[in-house]
Image (tube, rainbow, N blue to C red; front, top):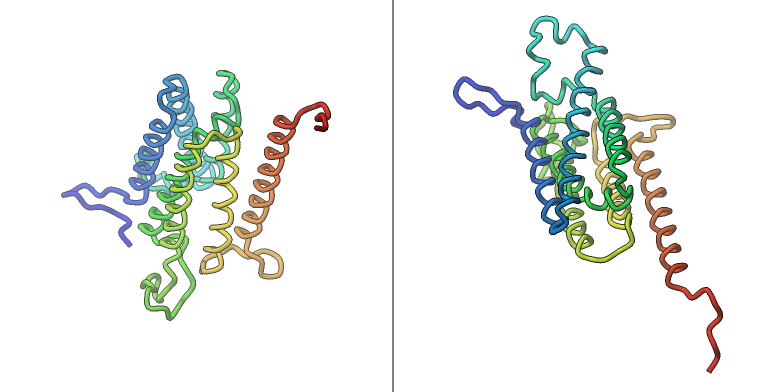
Length: 254
């Protein structure tokens, strides 16, 4: 694990830098795939920037409200790149709200915009896994397998690497899907379906899963829900396509 990168007297938070790098690479890829539609590219940048800034501010303020003592000794830590000082759920909620408001004000097509943003989401999923690897988060259960890694006093499944490899494979699929002329929403929903399936697989090797009820893993329950919703959405879009293509009048017999 490498939680910090030391450059002379400067110590940089590696997990935060990886996430920022993933955001930049993902947005660059989304821009490239959206070309030559300059207006679409501009909206991608503006929407992403708006959601990012709002999400970071919301996440840091929510963390401050929950744990004010964490910033009392050093108020400048409010500007830290440490993702551990963010309330991710609050940040996600604020960022999504900001994106929705921007999209409504600019009259952006909901599904079309999500498709254009999917390459960004796919790259960011890889970045999240690598960020967890750098910080030691989302660690695996103990294992005797030869590719286990030493972490937190035990040899564990490298679940962060499992997740990164699966996310990279999904990213390749997303790039291929973007080259096809499919119904708006298809690319995003396929990404969600495959990502949910990957989460179900990786979660089985995790050692820090939150359990609910009779030993059920919360993340897997969420993944099952996302998979069901995305498959239903894909089926609905497929039905819409068939209704659009099918003639509304009986065909003549020859």
